[in-house]
Image (cartoon, rainbow, N blue to C red; front, side, top):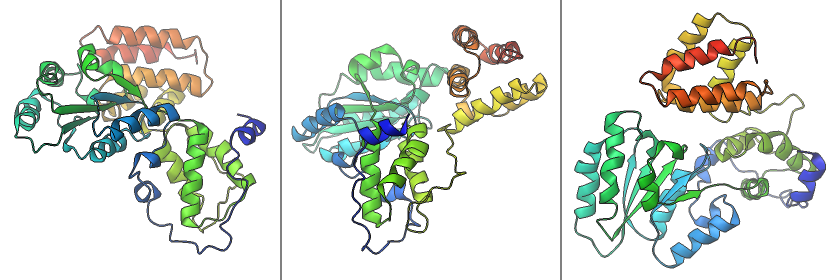
Length: 339
């Protein structure tokens, strides 16, 4: 992104009225302090926000699947929607409670419980963790298909990072809604936070921060806000010349970068294999997801584009075999000398 384009599109820092304000304590996490309380607080594109506002105004919400990358506020938005219509809410983290037993013992009883006249809302957070990766999780998705249509006073809000891990019948009941936003949306939110905190900044510094730290980190709003707080530790927005942003916006992205660098540097393949198999918790043992992260790492780090078809072909084979870890190791070995 060129500086000229950034300035043309983001002209919200032209005035700074903070000079006479008393700087507030910035030790509290801004991510928590400024966690959205209303839909207007959410960083969202205008069309999505208008759609959700119309639901809230009608005092009802539709069942839906909120999807997008990690750190963009899907779980926060799901809770906010349920609270905005005063729904009786059951929140389930499917990364922990992602089995068919949860459907029988928690979800179904909640649906069957006597209603107080309010709608009910079940939030299935990280629902892609309840996927075909194991029999119990896959059973949860299948068990929910008919249940979702059996109770007219119950809405289901699903959040996920990887829609492909969810079976299609779920989407016919909970249509997909992509959560995203523009660079300007994020800049507006940052300005609101800086002004509320009494942070001293000028337009040039704010634009430089946007170019160096916001654009490379999009759309991880959590990382962006944490970085913004770090750069304002003394009440003034300061950017060091040697400051760098971690463009890998998640632990999985960072891990993928690490593995490909080991391969590019010619590290012993046994070491690479042990590093991958010893850190499966980072990608929840889902080698297809890890393959997708490797592909993104290739593009992010400017490695040879000829490796992308190799990764894509291996990812397909992983979906067809009992032990995808062998396909992953074979893929990594094939990448030696080609990055």
